[in-house]
Each structure stands twice: as structure tokens, then as C-alpha cells.
Image 1 (cartoon, one colour):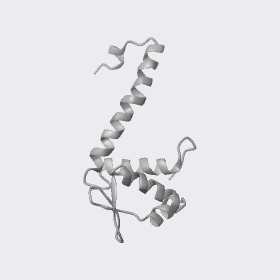
Image 2 (image 1 turned 90 degrees about the vertical axis):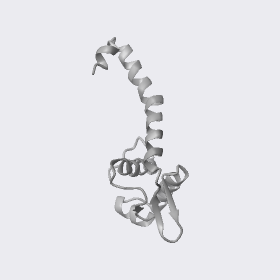
Image 3 (image 1 turned 60 degrees about the vertical axis):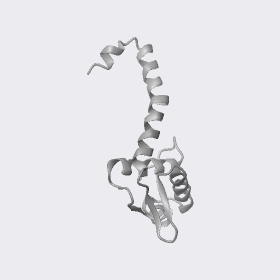
Length: 113
């Protein structure tokens, strides 16, 4: 996995796991690699992966079966979609609209179907 300097590594791993869930690569109730396995796979410290898993757990995307491992929650896809849609509408759309205005573009032409 290639990491960017613009975002914390644990959040890049978070995004990668969310993308795998959205794409269907990781299905509801599927087991995900252990902290150590994932750390070894992507070449990061297990503490970094643990931080990612803690965020995924607190967001309701994965859950831990004590002694067995981490699993994708049944609602994971819906949770991720809702969060990403909200972030898109609150962060990216205003920037796009501002750029359209600055460039003097006609929004009807830009968003023509």
C-alpha cells in the first residue's frame, strides 16, 4: 500500500478498508485480518492498525468477537455511504461550486446530463 504524506496513515488504512467494503470485496460478517496480519501486509506498525480498528469499531463499521477476531458489521456499507455522502456534500461540493463561480462557468452547462 502506498501512503501519502497529506493524511495520517491510520486514516489511509481506514479509507482503504472502507473502500473494500463498498466495493463488496469485504462483505458483511466477513472476518478481516488481525491487527498483526494487516500490519505485516501493509508494512506498518501494529499500533497504527490498532488505531484504525478502534476507529472502525467506534464508527460501527467492524466489531470484535473476543478471541476470534474482527468482522465487518451488517450495517457497515450503509454507515460508510452515509458518512462519505455527508463529507462530500459538506466539504467537496462547496469547493466545486466556488471554483465554478471563480471560473465564470455556467452551472447548467457544467452539470448538463
